[in-house]
Amino acid sequence: MFENLSQRLGGVIRNLRGQGRLTEENIRDALREVRMALLEADVALPVVRSFVERVRERAVGQEVLKSLSPGQALVKVVHDELIVTMGRANDALDLAAQPPAVILMAGLQGSGKTTTSAKLARWLAERHKKKVMLVSCDIYRPAAIEQLQTLAGEVGAEFFPSTPDQQPVAIATGALEAARRQFLDIVIVDTAGRLHIDDAMMAEIRALNDAVTPVETLFVVDSMTGQDAANTARVFNEALPLTGVILTKTDGDARGGAALSVRELTGKPIKFLGTGEKSAALEPFHPDRMASRILGMGDVLSLVEEVQHTVDHQQAAKLAQKIKKGKGFTLEDFRDQLGQMEKMGGLEGLVDKLPGAAALPSAVRNQVDNREMKRMVAIINSMTPQERRHTQVIKGSRKRRIAAGSGMQVQDVNRLLKQFTQMQKMMKKVAKGGIGKMMRGMQGRMPPGMRF
Image 1 (cartoon, rainbow, N blue to C red):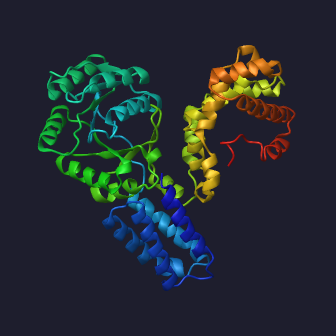
Image 2 (tube, rainbow, N blue to C red):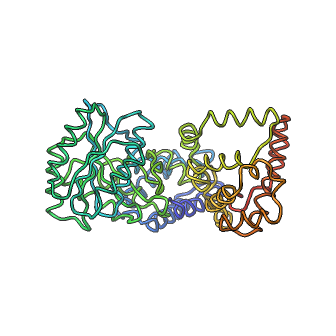
Image 3 (cartoon, rainbow, N blue to C red):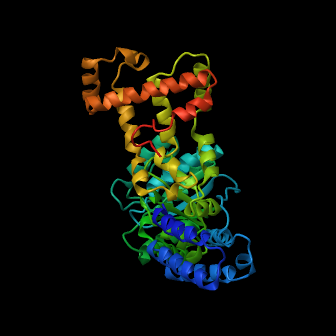
């Protein structure tokens, strides 16, 4: 997300840092570039005008022109105004209500409401230890109820059954009563979407809102629709008391226009980002951290939080002890580490949060490919337990069998074994306390798709 905008703004900032001092003229040229970058990112025109004007007012003042490092001072101004545009701080869910608290999900068809409802249930269970019930009031879309039931099973949430011949209000109130009897904390109500906004849809969701009095009414919208996402959110906000927005499919959105437009056009905060298809791919939206990512400063805080919540610390401690005792690093250990990395959004997700990632050449960024990790895991899974623990037994016929079982070529197996041998050597250095030697040894030895 924001890949194109980051690159454009990065170029503007580099040019300004090369200036000995800033004048109104070169600030005007820089802001013209900023304006074009925002428009290309599909940010709504009123938002672009407001943003550029606010930056101009601060940039031509004492704060920047009289600064000892005017280029850096202007970067700070742009950073601060990006935060203002996107909402200053993360708006957490308001769950301070007598249980069961109701969260109502609204949005157009195809925006990802049903999947997001399940993601949110998992997030609430894992991060806040809440007992969650999911219920579908979508009586129009074929198999919508069955889809949510399947997702509820995957994320470990309770599910309230419903049928297409029931009325949405009756379904929602029935779920609320069931949640009270089961002493559940939260009920997430998935509503019907339409291909476009119509009177019948708005009347139905208003009736649902009145019947269950939700503590949160969240508008789910596809970020890839750009400024149209913000305009649709504005229409919904006029009909419903929205409390926030969830942007979905942000992993496929290189522009980010929706994220920069929604808050200013609707007055409602973005609360979450959907960052992938998996049920764990939902993260809180922090405007300050996102502004840092846009300007190439990275998002180390989110990376640290992700590690804390997703890494199996007990497993990591066991591996550390194992290596320390010199018991050796096996392909099973390697596979476990790849799995941990995938839980954190894969290598692409990690690189996006690192400082300076936006400045990486496109040829380098293209090598950062999560598919390579999946290929490695497939090859390791095609091996027997003995082969994973004792790679020296893997010879010609075994390599052909492993390649066929994983859908790869023999040279792919050879490459993995070579990379793993190099990693084993590094781990031995770690066991001997040679962490500095190991870091130097890693230069140029990362696998294809994992070099950056």
